[in-house]
Image (cartoon, rainbow, N blue to C red; front, side, top):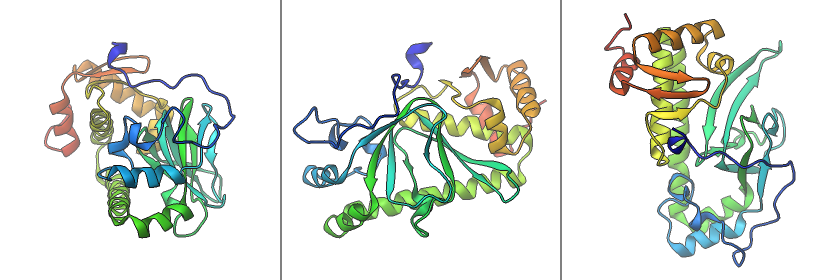
Length: 259
């Protein structure tokens, strides 16, 4: 089963990696296996080199450490190379709400572009690695590479749509729909990265899943047991296999109901 699971980050420290140099091993955008999911999608090689030149460093973030906190000044976007993150907000009375889970090939930090300060915090769910993209440098590059600006707009549009879908998820769906939609979403995102669409690990805890879906940890546990009893999935600790993906999609869409 492990052969089908997403790549695990190697153990890491809190130290940072020096600025990327093109003459080095060339672990940069053009050589990255996830480049089609990140900013360089569709760029010519010369334009990729321009983007490479502004990337300041790669950072390794240990599990449970913060990439950034609420209120911190905005300077960089972060492209996730390895690992998983959760983003969350804390209200005035100290209640935390998880706003999303992010994985390799996705960008973090776009929430801060308008205000120059982060509106959420990003915490590593496992030892992870990101590429820092200084936003001032990126803005200058937009003027030189219009294709890059167009793609960035598409990324922002996708994030807005994702937030709208989350609002719909939390506001109008039954608990079983929410959980099915969550699993189907993970399935599609892993498939886009070349991993199995039906066998993967849940990097987040049941409590974190509940915090995202607006459910209690007991509700998440009951739904896991219910879906397992209905043979929609099998689960062992955090390893999960979706046995009836089409049925899960129907439940998420509201066209099928759990017995």
